[in-house]
Image: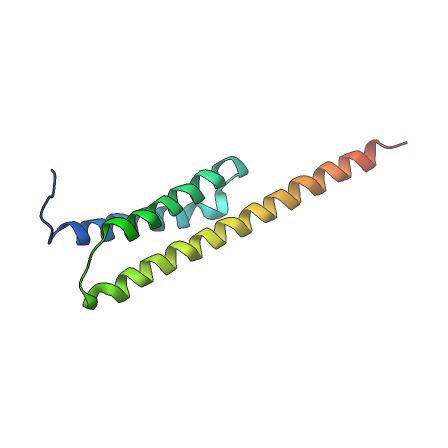
Amino acid sequence: MRLTSPCLKPGVLRRNSDKIVHGIELRVDRMQLIEIDAAIAELDELDDKLVRELTVSNSYMPSVYDLRTHIQYVVGQIEKRKARLSSATSGAAGALAVAGAP
């Protein structure tokens, strides 16, 4: 089903965006390094799409601001996860190097 009505598109885009952001947010604690860059790219692309395509009246601007703020919050959580995984990986590699040293 395609929704082409200008009245319906902003609501649909916001709801779909909410679902995407929430779905990624639920997976953050289980993400591995290989998934992290893709998730950040997806959220950045979504934020760009909201800026480009979403036109709403002033009464809906707080909702759009909240959604964009939520996107940036989730990106921050993903970046913290990436830092934790990177330090754990480098710490484990360092421990292996020390254990293997004569």
